[in-house]
Image (cartoon, rainbow, N blue to C red):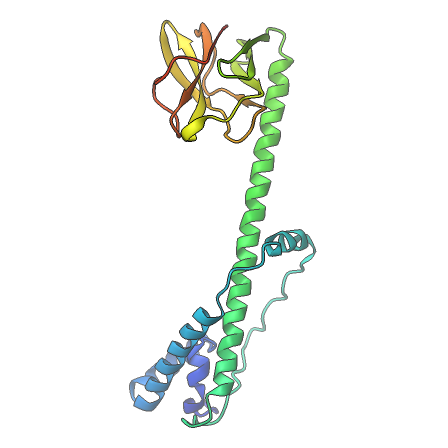
Length: 251
């Protein structure tokens, strides 16, 4: 700012490219320079219009390619301690001096869009890792449950189709439901599991939708329960059964 004409920094200021201390000085310059203040506002409006103009939905396979390439992407080196501000152009001319600024704004928009895509890809990769970790932990619990010395296995057919096996262990304090051939329910309904205790039905979890077969751990413990029930409930489940049980397996 000491050696650069402040009138040439309108573009860098509009794009947020000035270091913090120089941006503060330039803001004070704007307070006493109506011409620069007007030009900064015009450039910011242009940046906003360009951002809308170049926004588009990424190709279907782009996220997959980005996720696959993430492990091989090196981090950027640290930025230099001091930044040198290079004027984008001399004192602006209203008739033909806007093109370099438009190009700079377009580059900025593309860079921001690419950074957003990379952030979303990293977030999705983190979610995939979390899901994989949870699946591995559940598989380990299921294996321990089925290998428990007091584990019981009881299989039954469900009304409407499919079958289920209830695996329970008092020692482990866990129950699992292994199911096969469950037909899709109409109207977005879901299969819900229940513990039967002294005539009361207590919610024990929802069976994952869209899968005809699989295994899941019930919430809660089998201690004190005399059976496990399966019903068809509205989307999201119910606090108590709203239809007759499709199956009731004694424990």
